[in-house]
Image (cartoon, rainbow, N blue to C red; front, side, top):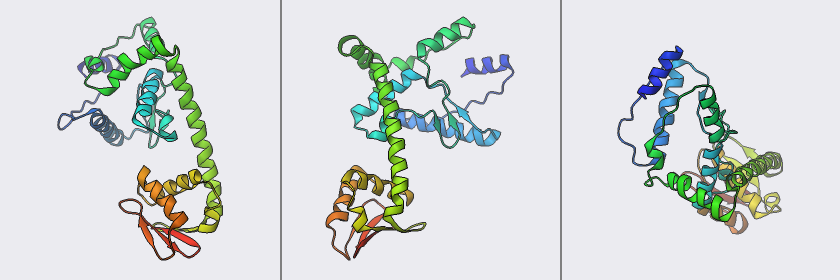
Length: 249
C-alpha cells in the first residue's frame, strides 16, 4: 500500500488506503471486503467506474476453480469484463506475461504479493500446482482451452437469456412486483431444462435465489402438483397451482 501511495504521489494522483475492520476468514470474505471498500470510495469520490487488474491467467484459474466446485453454464463464463454497477476489467484479454513484458519495457515497477504462493488458499493451489501440471503432463494449452470454454459459455448464456425473454410472452399471464402467473399448459410443452431456467429467472425477479434442489422441486411441482396445492421453492418464494395456471409469489 505504501508503495502504491508513493507511485500515486509521483504521478500526481490521489491515493486512498483503507483497512478491513477485522482479518478476513477466507478468500471470499477478503474479496467482498475489497469490493465494499472500492464501492464506498467510488461513491465518495463521485467516480463512474472501478477498474481492476484481472488478466487472462486469472480468467483461466477462475474457470477451472468453478469447474471443480460444480458450476453451471453461467459460472463457466468466468470473470466478466464489465459488471454492474460500474466495474470494468480492461486487462482481462491479456496474459500476465505480456503485461509484465510491457511494464518492463516502459520502466514500470511491480510488486510481488507473497500470499499468492501460500498453499493455504485454494486458488493458489490451482495457480501454482494444478494448472502447471495440466499444461505439462496432461494437455498443453490448458489455459487457452479454459479461455475458449469461457467464451463459448458466455455466448450460450446470452442465447439462453434471449430465448427466455421471448418465451415470457408465451408463458406469462400476469407479472407484477411480487407475483408472477404462468400458463401451465403452454409451460409444460417445453423441455425440463428450459422450464428450470425460466423458474430460476422468475424467482430472481422476485428477489430470491433458487438452489439446485429448489429448482428440481419446482420443476417437479409444475408437472405433478395438484390444483390448490403449493410448494416452498426458496426461503421467500412459494409456487402455487391454480387449475391451468401456477403462481410464484
